[in-house]
Image 1 (cartoon, rainbow over the protein chains, first blue to last red):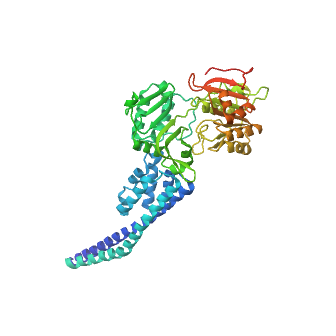
Image 2 (cartoon, chains in turn purple, green):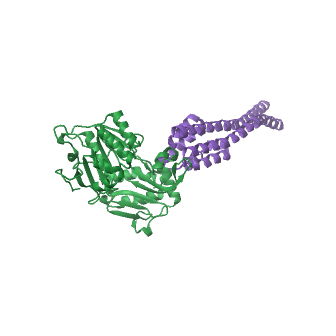
Image 3 (tube, rainbow over the protein chains, first blue to last red):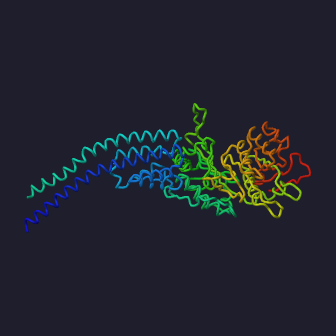
Length: 174
Length: 353
């Protein structure tokens, strides 16, 4: 009975370690996915502004729908808050929309880049807005490359660390 | 009122049937105040709640200037508001700061300056409900020769109103005689803020609906609304009631638009606002020659004032317009001073409001 309990406990520790590793690893992968969604949203926003001259609330809504993911949902939420209908300026609306805990994985750097962009969003002519979105996408591209590096480098590491840590703990306890 | 929680309560076309004092307040509260920064909106809202209905009804403009007192233009004169909406002397007035003006500009443009570049270049934008916002600030010149308004520092929000029946006294006087009644080419002349556009708007509605008592059959009316002031289209929908047979060519230059609408929509009447140059005058003459009745307006105190201007003198002299309607603010906006041909003959003379 005692041995069976030990085996069961060891298995539980191993599974927990494995899941913890996978969770840390998938958080890194998830950050890359959200950055992809953000890039897609900004690209679509640029299209809406440059070709459609779509008013910002509608442009944010459409971009959010196209991008999908948590970022897409944040854009859609911002679209309801911004402009004549919501009474907020883009920086206020995006700050509020990005404040959800689930978007914390994006990291403070990405949030800062978006909020810096938001202070100038919709305040100037078409060509200036295009330049603003291009500059933002360029800054995000560098962050996305770093995130992809981190995911490739640390993703496997976290998975291995999880299981190895669990094995070490089991050995110590046994 | 916090601007963060404001909502437009009525972005639908403002069909202005039976517009009374309460409705003006509702329209301002629903369509204009949510687009002002919280401090300005609070002051105007408090004034609207506190003031007597007849004064509310007489509100014509809200003038917001950076660093200068908040001013409301009533038909009886200007008043200045304190932060809590009480009427004060200008020195004690509430002066919106740069942040408030910037936020108001963002909300007025729906945070989409890029989508309003043509409007901003002309110096005004149209809001839902047909209210017009004039803008001032620093004009920036580009090498392309284009001027763009930057650093907006002031707004003049003109409250749109459709005065149903404003043209009742004028309509019988602009129609042809004989059994088949139709409108004659008519030019409405007045100084600014005397009701030219309101008169044109109501004439468009009456002609579009027809009037059985005058044996006037309904006409198809084409409106060339270069300044988006007659129909005040928002999202392509006229915000004023211009009747059931109206086609609007919105924000199209008059000179181009008049012939375009004649060719494309075959209207019985073409309505256009503020003939302001040689090109506009020539387009009017061409449209008159095409056999379509033109209803237009022009700035001026009287017909002779108009005849002294180079671009409009030949238009007046050569008799392209058969009827002139002169308006003033003598007894308030829309006072009809004269209706008739250039040389007063046996036509009726009207001097009542």
